[in-house]
Amino acid sequence: MLVKVFGSAVFGVEATTITVEVNIDKGIGYHLVGLPDNAIKESSYRIAAALKNNGYAMPGKKITINMAPADLRKEGSAYDLTLTIGILVASGQIKADDVDKYIIMGELSLDGSLQPIRGALPIAIKAKEEGFKGFFLPKQNVKEAAIVAGLDVYGIENVQEVIDFLEGKGTLEPTTIDTRAEFYKTLDFPEFDFSDVKGQESIKRCMEIAAAGGHNIILIGPPGAGKTMLAKRLPSILPPMTLREALETTKIHSVAGKLKEVGLMNQRPFRSPHHTISNVALVGGGSYPQPGEISMAHNGVLFLDELPEFKRDVLEVMRQPLEDREVTISRAKFTVTYPSSFMLVASMNPSPSGFFNDPDSPQTSSPHEMQRYLSKISGPLLDRIDIHIEVTPVPFDKLSEDQKAESSVDIRKRVTAAREIQTERFEQMENIHYNAQMNTKHIREHCALDDVSKQLLKTAMERLNLSARAYDRILKVARTIADLDAAPTVISSHIAEAIQYRSLDRDGWLG
Image (cartoon, rainbow, N blue to C red; front, side, top):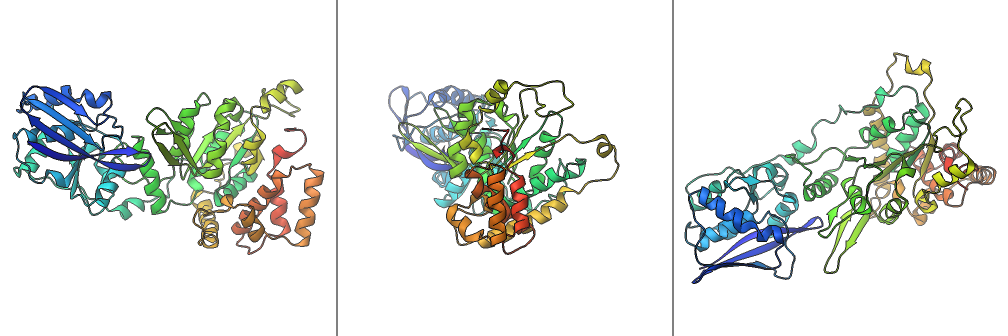
């Protein structure tokens, strides 16, 4: 008897429906075809044990299973449940006329219970698109899949529950989630709040500008000045995610298997990889490409602490994703693209000892040590960082004062208002949503300067020896400062403030 059941494969952040054809005939043997990997080939042992422990049996006949399309590589243990149901129906042990109306996915334990799978959200989206009635999957993944309206999503704990439901002996309630209620859960109590930061008013202002325009930022200062503390609080002042951004972000975390029984992600991700990270772990890849840290930080913040400690080749592979806001991973037979639109926040000591130009420190670094330390960061990478700011240690009288600083919620209101101005400005453009994404054409259009501002910028570039690459960055940042002031045009005070945020372009740093 020939039976068709349906599963799904995830490539990148999109799913492809897989037709599992099970044919049982005279003879003996178990033949699995259609480019399955070792995890799928080993499924016969898990299926046999699970069936026996639930009162069923593996048919002692010739079982041929084809996973179509047969030229597409299938991977992982998530097809266990699909194959099990197919074998039971084909061998006549259960009667299930509606089995072809459902997507069935799940990894089996030997007792028949189910283990979680990856990519439940993209699979559910594809199932709805293709008109399937429902989706059976492990209970641990049910919240992420239930985000998709118009599809019956059933969370299963044991294979017996699916069998009873298909035979009409038992009932299962589909899980429903109010996506909008889930999304608009209160965000007014962030774990890390700017009210905890004493002093550092100029740095907080700088972080506010970076958040308002989506600008990449690098913090330079001695150990203990508060660079990491400030960076960890940046997500708390970023504007809330839109529903589209939340779905995109949840999709990537679903594919990576990082959701842990969460429905829709409503907080922007903050990723902080260690400096020993490899190229593949940062940008994604592997024989079966998985998203890397830059994709996990999509719509959020990627924090690289102690930037010069990262291997130079690791930093260099970030250059293209920073520019294109997506990363494409190519293999011999297929190519996957992961989105990676993130804010880069980096921190570094100004020298190997950490106390460059500090008259109170006995530790100094030779010019050769300084050059070797700073040469790990290439000019083209710094070219993609809009704001450079020096962080100085907080004096004792500021640390010991009792006065509470401004909270993240208050700062976020100003940031959100500035972002709304930018959203309106770029509403006709598909891939531009905030100032940091502007190209040269948009800069000329939206950052027109009067004569006073032009003269100020010219003088600054000559006196401070600012590089040509700093010019566009200063204009972008000035446009964001103007948006925070709700000013229609960029004026000299905005340019003057933006010029301050190019520390690394000055003489005495890199050159």
